[in-house]
Length: 254
Image 1: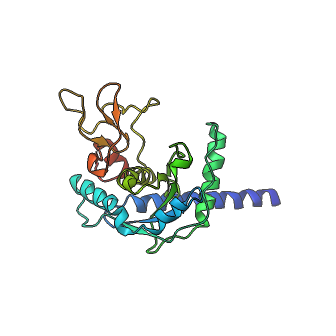
Image 2: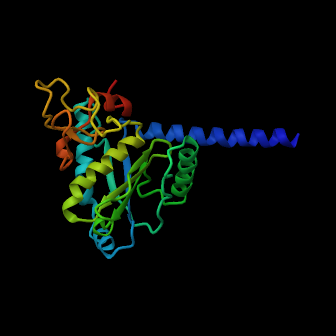
Image 3: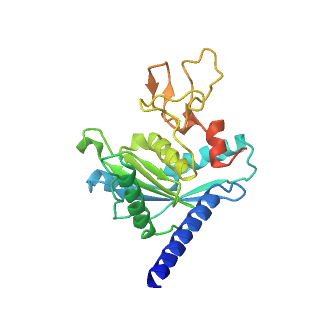
């Protein structure tokens, strides 16, 4: 009797979580209403440089993310005047759990649950956000130029973006942040294990002749293919587009 009751309670909890995740993703992909994105800065390494950079942030620091989504949504036929709005929130002191060093499905599942639990304990943002983007600043002079990878989860609408503290990296950082926001809306990566954009979905202009060099970056591919073996990072969101495959995934076209 008690065993059956425990199973029923567990099934109820799982169903509630699944329903909540489905509703959250549906809201994040509902382009008939404005998607609210809350950006929470975090000092990743406790450095003075990161603290100073965070103190100098404003809504304008992320304005081109909002402009990018508006421009791209309208290009794909969305009529909402402001399909996405970005708002800067107070800085957080808590770091999210690190992803596993191994790629096993079980470890990734455990990390995903830990991340969602961590995010559940963080503020929802004001106005209440459909997507929360946790932007972690690192002083790359202390990490030999390398910072952790970024991640975006559609279940829970959580974007984790690891970025550089340098002021002149803001526009490049915003490309990373926008990429991870799109993951929360169910967009998938458009590059292979070698980081090369996958043809045709990872190309901004797949019909170009000659195919190389491409002029723009399909944002979920992350890089501009200049040749079959040469890549270039986009300098800003002005160099990026949302291609047809990504547009279908996030629901702005059918």
